[in-house]
Image 1 (cartoon, rainbow, N blue to C red):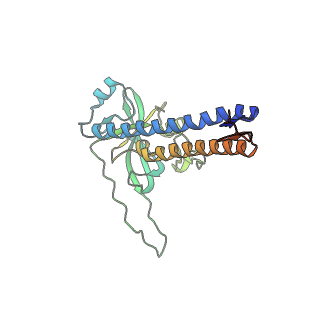
Image 2 (image 1 turned 180 degrees about the vertical axis):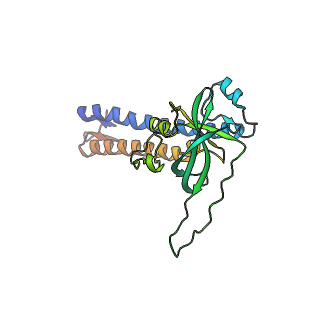
Image 3 (image 1 turned 60 degrees about the horizontal axis):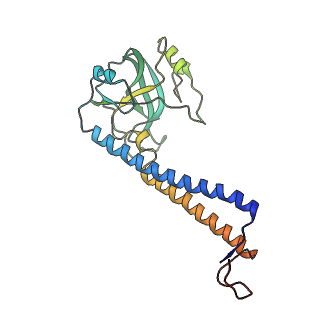
Length: 236
């Protein structure tokens, strides 16, 4: 084989190819990690919920499954979705958990689908508070979130200082929410293992295509040949 690489092109190609391969390996690792998270959560759902004292003794943390907290006081209406996918207004109240006020979801008003003359294809299931709640991360503000309208008690994203003021609380814990456990939570299943595998295949495919293009460029320039050179000798 005869190969004389382009110096500048090769200096650029090596780190680019390494980055593509690393991204593929990383996504493959994420697939395994997410599969483990789902399996661990499924196992956790089979155990009794923690009492609030037990949760606080462990340290309140994401994915803890707890008994219903005692939330009270004014309600906030936050637009969102149930685990079933129904859109509507989620109701939140504050509860003292581990010495700090934490938002707890206490109700849900589903939006009716279809206007006058139209009918919802499937009436939303009524809200029934379950016997188990789960601690979830405090949601980040979406990039294209609509503005909150506190005077109408309509919230599109979780603004801790403004929500604390609306609930007449000195502050709110901006680390966690506590929501009804109605199935696998969104933050666990949002990106399933199959999606990470798809990303990994994409990155590996890009790496293979990049390597082929690199080789073809050298072949067309006469810098990459297989077999014997024109003088009849094996290429070096």
